[in-house]
Length: 180
Image 1 (cartoon, rainbow, N blue to C red):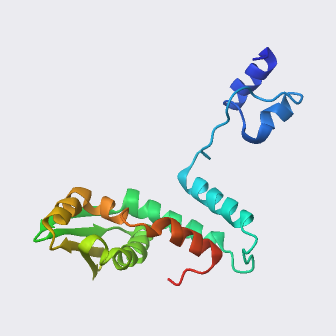
Image 2 (cartoon, rainbow, N blue to C red; image 1 turned 90 degrees about the vertical axis):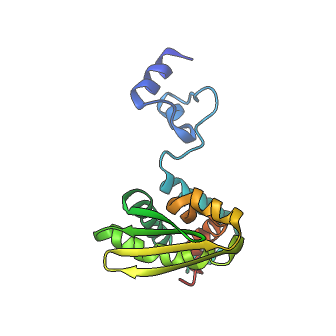
């Protein structure tokens, strides 16, 4: 690697995507592969959806709403990282008492009941919620002992991450076609 390029990359924290370092370094391009991750999960999720929308000639740009997807990704962050979740084993599965305050509470009230509806019936699971003043109780059960073990092993966050609808509903949100 050329000395000027190495010093430039050290000052900038490493190679920059899209040849930006090369542009700053008199047209020289960094050697080797460029990073593929965008540096932050929500940003990467939006970036992936943008690529899909731009590649689809049938995208109806009058309905596209990436700000809605951004709000949902913030909700996901709030529920995943800031909500309190007390998980208790019950007959046939788990009960998760999910609580929070402020923005976290609002995210819990939006996400947990919606997710319970999405996964209800999948994998022989029965999923439902009950409202609480400061959150939601999520109850997930099954009559299949193997599924009971899976539900208990997953706990609250694993159950929330279960299902195949996540990517599809993120794209539908961005396209403005998600009904919820």
